[in-house]
Image 1 (spheres, rainbow, N blue to C red):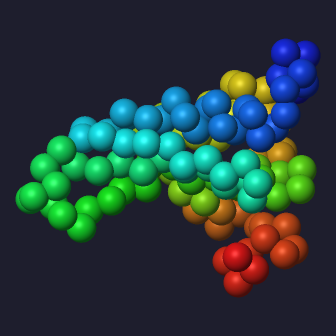
Image 2: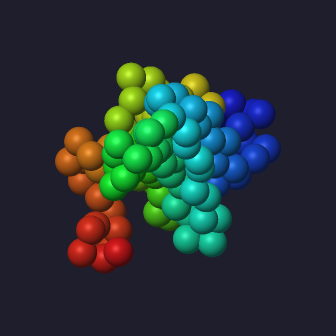
Length: 112
């Protein structure tokens, strides 16, 4: 991890990087940040809620589990994993759950 990344917490890095995924889809979106449970996501809604009233898209979703960052979902053409690595989080500490990379004990879907 570079020295600038070491000065801020993994939570702060993940929150900042995930927030950059706002407005990457047509329509409008917003970030969901739960710093207590360490969950971070961006939701997107279509411009026409009348035409698509039940449509909500998860753009990205990540959580922190101990020393690991777990990416549960990434529906972008700008991979969240790449953005997190560029922000200073080592790839070894990132788990791509949506690609079936193994999760640490106690952090699987059955444990949520």
